[in-house]
Length: 218
Picture 1 (cartoon, rainbow, N blue to C red):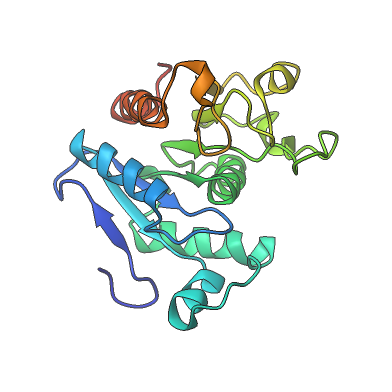
Picture 2 (cartoon, rainbow, N blue to C red):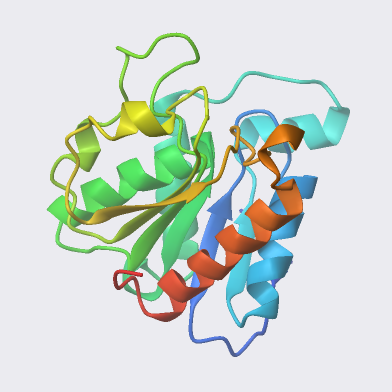
């Protein structure tokens, strides 16, 4: 664990060549079962995974009270502070679950423009739009991003399912791994013949390849 200002949760080998900084989603802690599964799975494949929590979630951990996420500018400021604390963008991949990945990708797009890019971005269940509001897209920063981005998405995610996303105009730097019949947590229905474990393990394999090849196309 790190000293102030962040308490980092680190998984994987200390001497790893690749570090992924992974942020939590809007409603779950950094050590939720989903985050644990992906951090441990990537750690076993040689990726050093560093997790942290945004201020509202730190307060929740302290007193147990659920709170809405901090405002967008605060979330982006925290991401930049975490990147600086861990040695700078050129050393890191960044990403996260849902909201955490969205904010990471927005910061990456800004760093692109500043010519100080991160090595790549990994989004786990990207919230392309609020549920039931497909016209409220959150894709502007993906139009021209140059940093390699891998989005792991459930094929029936209510915040951006397969048929919807195919019609989006995104940078060629953005690539996808589709979890078969998966929801926002990549969980398939029983009738699909797939299991959540299978979808998670396949996603971890693809993520590890993306990260260990330094963001090259997988």
